[in-house]
Image (cartoon, rainbow, N blue to C red):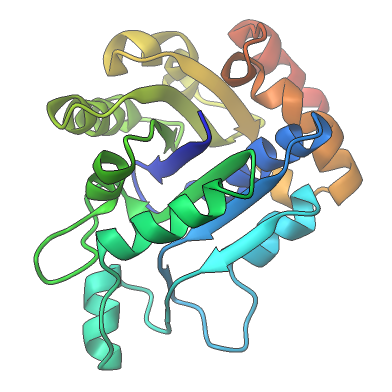
Length: 239
C-alpha cells in the first residue's frame, strides 16, 4: 500500500490533522512520505495551505499542490469562479504515481467529501481512487448524524469497488455528549468498516514535538496495533 486517499464526510472535520498524524507515524518508522493536495480552496495565493500545516506538524514531508482557488467552495465551482481550468482525475493520478515512484507512502488529501465535484463532468475523489486502485481512509466528525454520513460514504466506495480502510474521528471532543460517546462503539457496525482511531480536538494546536509523539496512539489500529475506545475516551480528559 503506497498510496492512500484521505477523504471526509464533510468539510472542516480534521482531514489535514489526520493526514499529518499518518505522515508523522510513517516518518517515525523511517519511511519517506509525500502529500498530494489536488485542489486547495478558500486560501489565497500567498497564504499557507493544508500541505504547509502537514509539514509543520509531521516534519519532512514532500508536498505537491496541483491547484489553488481563493473561494471556499467545491473545487469545480471555485475553478469556474476563478476563470481557470478545473483539476481532472487523470492529472491527479499522474501526480500521485510520480510521487509514489520516489516515496514509500503517498497521502492524497481531498477537499471536502468524497463526491465533491472536481470538474464540470462531476468527477470526484472517488474517481481518483478508482484510477489509482488506492484504498480510502474516511475522516468523520464525531457527534449526532455522523453514523449516517459515514455509512453513505462507505457505501459509495463499495459501489465503486474501492477499498475503504476504515474511519477516523478527526476532532474528538474532550467532553463528548451521549451521541458522541456512542459513536466510538457504534461506528464499525453503522459504516461496515473498522474504526481506526480518534484524534482529540485541538490536536493541531499542539507543538510539533508533542503531536508527533502522540500520533501513533491516536491511529494505532490503522498501523496494525491495538486501540481501545474506552481507554481513548478516558484519556481525553488528560489530553
